[in-house]
Image: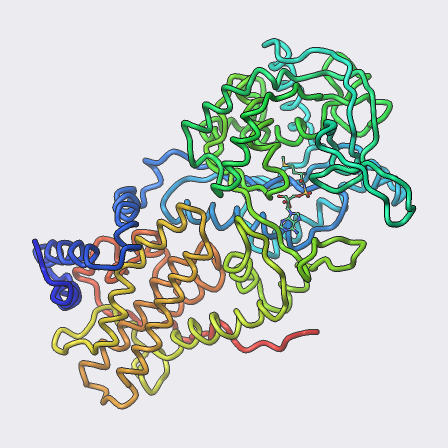
Length: 592
Ligand code: MSP
């Protein structure tokens, strides 16, 4: 079927999908329209077909396992930690919306010298110290509507069991040996650096020469220890091969390239234990209590712990092996090496598959500088949540946070997003179509008028709405939330323009054009709300409640014009609006 784009657009909407034949014509017209749309829509048409083909039935799909890093229990959470977590939560909710069963874990990383030191400084026993900090992370995640299915702490018995088992596997398979390890050790990074990874600087405070890590800029000291070593050197080719076969294994592409370049030089073996007399706060090496297991091997294993590893009949934990390998590990850019080199190597050595994807995000800066307690420029997430509300904070983080490039935090920017996008565009549109003067019967209009032509501004809106599902799905696929949200808000702005152009307030109550104007505004709000459920679950669900949209009408299959009912609108009628429509984004008073 070949149609001129304008004709196709008319057809797509005026058919109204009343009969099966009309729906077939609707599909053909939509296809034709997609071919005529700008290149971005064409580019993503295949992604759309893919997402449509996947439907929304969870039963047929294999589970997707999404993780956040586990957070050091040495200090209270800040906005950077929340960013990692909201990104992972939004991704997990995208998969859920698409009908995948999901497992989603987060938690705290509680062993090692850094935590031991922080506890000593506060004159508290390390276990008690970790209880306090871990509870703070948990409370923040509750407040931020993080839908984790498991919260793991590395001090839990189930985790210690998993780590000891993994160690023994690596040992039995011949990947661990005892050796002398000398190197530049950094306490705060919990890591040894080689000569080429450190440099000498003059400490600005003491005016004395000081060796520091080039990467983290933190002090290092020359340390010699008898350690257990992991044969990382043997994994160079396997890791390169894994990356070459999986070009999207690390996102963004710049991080993928960096890791691949690192893997082009020989990999040294890795020290994976510390002397217990130096670091007592850790998991002992099985059968050698003079050593504790390196904190990164301990921490990375959390991703197996939450799936009930070891998957042996005597492990009392639920066996979630079907969710391995992880679909996505979300990590900050500073910990890519551990997740993209060490972790896949440990897994391969243990006979397990490496993760499918590692998504690395950039950092939030404050005044273009790294946030740090000593500079006093750390953003407190709790205060932000109280001032702007959880969904506005989540929206801001996902819209303005960086994946490849760092983003600078500013209170002005979040307040602008609230006023302009959320209250000014989306909130405004959602209230326009339910205003008593426009909609005295309080009806959710679910089909356009069959008897009046569209205003040109409404046709422009329809073009955007038709392209939206494919484009947003492709951005979600590429973990590009900023572009996905921009696409949705672009359609919302177009809907506000169409409303103003059509001037429905000048129409009489029986004017068929009024029905179309209200229908288009409501369709835009509905499509936008379902598409953004992963990012703003609270407010988007409220907006859908306002429109009388049922719970089973809120899946990815419902994102699209006329898809309030995924199976088509046959036999469905207009429905009542919620009796007491709540303004979704009221004006707020900014607390200083
Ligand atoms: N415990 C390790 C992770 C072990 S995972 C097996 C760790 N913890 S952390 O608390 O230091 O950092 C956790 C996450 O927070 C990291 O992904 C890190 O990149 C992120 N962020 C810390 N500061 C940040 C910003 N300023 N901005 C964005 N994210 C930042 O590393």
